[in-house]
Image 1 (cartoon, helix red, strand yellow):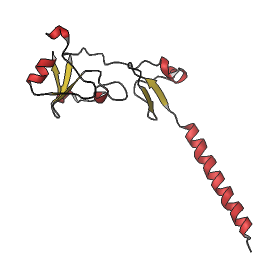
Image 2 (image 1 turned 180 degrees about the vertical axis):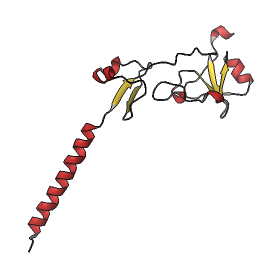
Image 3 (image 1 turned 180 degrees about the horizontal axis):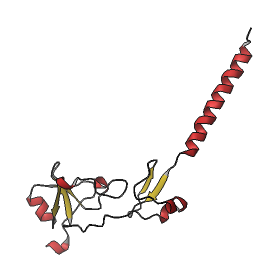
Image 4 (image 1 turned 90 degrees about the vertical axis):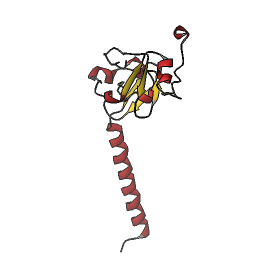
Length: 136
């Protein structure tokens, strides 16, 4: 015959072992932390393509996010699907690994704010592209 106290002890022991297993497996998971150029902190459990072994030993503030090497053909970039235009550095159009999220076949580049507005594109409400004084 099993006493109630024995049952409770077994249950507590089982729960304790389960919690220890979950906790230790969490500690073994790799977490990647870095800051963007605009000081935005990024945390991911997925290793970015550009991450190197040396970066794992560095402080997150010392990790520099790579920038696409291709020159930008304009001052603003638009998405021809949703008809919005952004600054190329806008968080809304960047992936976690620092690349542009708008597929190349949907990108429209504009030399000026007026050019984007003339083609009926709407300014992004996040990065708020504005007409610069040099465009006057």
